[in-house]
Image: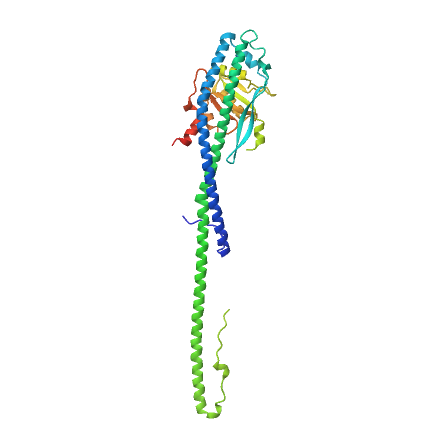
Length: 255
Length: 119
């Protein structure tokens, strides 16, 4: 698979920028991993609590059923009466948020409003005491259920958050960091190639300069020889005529 | 996950057999709101699966219900929908009934737990 990298110009500044990004990604990755581990630990604790609570709930509900059976024994069937007189919930739950290693988890609190008025008429004939007893047993039972429900909600939400965090950790580890590393190596290779080109160019120019210097030297020697020969032919009064311009060859100026 | 959304969820809904619902109503969870909707449904031998499913769906869609209590043997009837339900609110809690003691192997939530920690 072709190396995926970011499209940036291969300059030295971009190299430092990209290296900083790599550092940031690595820090982020380790932080997220730690967060995921903390959450998973907390998660396991909750799972264990849920398992225990569910077993306890089984027993609690059984107790409650027994007390209801007692009521039925004494008073007869009150279920219809109870159903008809249920108008407004006196047992409600209040939600509050708890911060658990960065995650806002909701928790339920049982909110029992003392309003026994609903079932005042139930069991007026007989067994009122049993009914009250059954009522308090069931209130305790429902309180246990509320706690259990809180745990369960926390479980579900934590589960999602952990999955999300793990997804992000994997994304950074397998997608983002390789991308940035590929970008860094691309920039490095481009810069190296530019350096090599620069070096090659300089060497070539030096070579050309040397060549030109050698050619020019040969030319000037040639001219000097010619001049000397001409001087011998035309006599000695041409000693003074020297071509100063041809003698001195100026160096090329390269910036 | 804003706090404001949860403040209104205060009710405990119940889908169960007669005894379970009676007991829970005794505790005081029963509520009939302005639209004449009750937050409890008694399931007997004549109740069809569609009715149970409809009750479950309507409870979970309501914004004022925080917890839905359901007897485990009734939950078995709508196990398919229950397994698909994965929202955090309202929480669905499976409770045992007088004739059917609690069986952890059938609980939807615990099954998800096993999935995660099965290894």
